[in-house]
Amino acid sequence: MAGHDPNARAVFDIGALATAPPPPPASADSPTPRPVPAFMDLEDPCYACMFGFLQADGHLAAGTGHKGRLSVEINVRDIAVLREFQQLTPYNSSITERVRSTNFAERHHSAVWTLCDREARTKVHDLGLPYGRKSKRITPPRVEFSRRDYLRGIIDADGSIGYTGQGLPFVSLTTASAAVGAYLCRYAKAATGTARRIGRNTRDGVYNVVYTKEAAVQLAGHLYYPDCLSLARKSTAAASLASWERPATMRVRPPGRRWKPWEDRTLLGSEDTAAAAAELGRSEASCSVRLWRLRTGQVRCPEDLPPGP
Image (cartoon, rainbow, N blue to C red; front, side):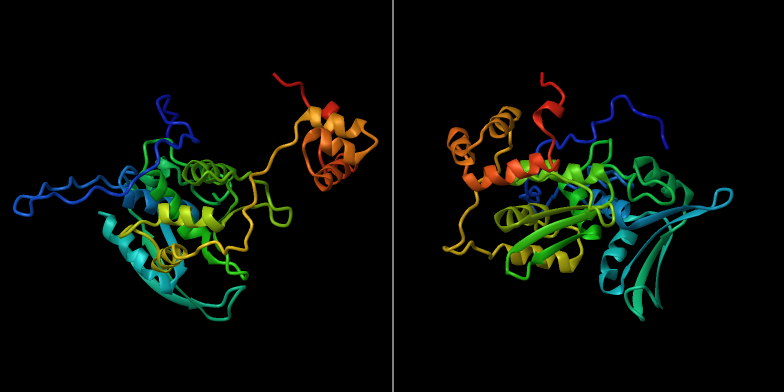
């Protein structure tokens, strides 16, 4: 990897939220030509999206000597996005198709985009795509980049958009990278006001970040704006969320209120849960569940916590 740049941006700097792309020049007779961005200039929305997709779904392999390759294999139904990547890449690359048996299907028809040029591979590697297994090691770029486009590429590759079985809109991301999962949470909090805390799934050790209802509608509309580079089916799914309206009978749940150490001490020191609930301004059910978690060790008792500032 390239050496650390002391002027590089912090991993969790979300910057200002993006707005809609600027309109075209007013005069059609003498339009101002848009400068052609350099390959993998992550301030360009298309390259930022492409890089996010490559981090999540691409594979950078090192061969002997100067050999190696960057490849992406996806379902053939999404081959159009690989053609977009090929057009964005000023180096020779190829797209092939193959049919094979996998753990999920006896006949899986996929498309593979392959790029072997050493200069291109070095550029992508230096920006933050590691060689070999990389799912836990990827992080948001440490250079200036188009944030919402980068996250759209990540969700295109490793996320889902649509409706739950109960008809609720959702946007989700499954990732093994703590940095990427946390970055989405911070960005989505700024974009939608909805907070999420990530934790690894005990079954397979990955993070599952899910937004539903109004938060999902806002996040999908923000990331998937008109004419953006994306998987066509996910762009269509994102657009479909815009028509969702909360049913009049669906109660709006207030934001969660975290327990403070002094509240835990009050609860543990009280012999009457109802009285403690009244003193703390919480429901008796909430206090009962919190007390059970404290006594069973599911949450740390106040005396086990490090002292506050």
